[in-house]
Length: 194
Image (spheres, one colour):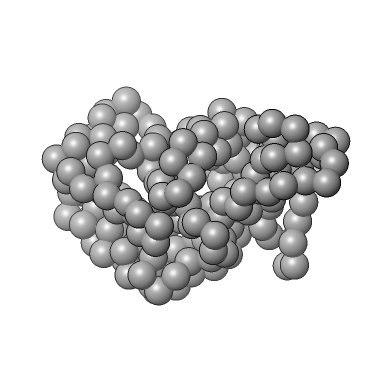
């Protein structure tokens, strides 16, 4: 599979809203998607399309952690999403005043979660973990657009900027990582937003 992840508009709106709902704490949830073809930079390419994000409300979180708290509710969510016929392709979580990269704790959590999902007979062949870094911003002038995608070094991460009130807003950097359960390895993916 090519390492491009395309985030659909509805999914992006849910990701941003759930992370900004409690900006002083980490937030997270499931990513629902499928392999698809999308136009990216004027070319139709194969990618993983993230169609929806499902925020997990029954969780424990703070400035430096996020994890599901109610395992019965967590399993009920997984069962319901599978029963409807959608594919859980990964999870997302936010980092507060940090970088959009996986920490060692994140990697340990992902690897344990994949083992737990395998016990519940959820067929996982690869997994996406999205990290959103949220930073409040004060602008010297209003940005031209509410949503602006710009690529960083290695052209893989994306930044979304928005205004809450005149000259005050936020900047969210999105980093996305493939996890291969067979080799326990991570590869950073190119993320594209509309």
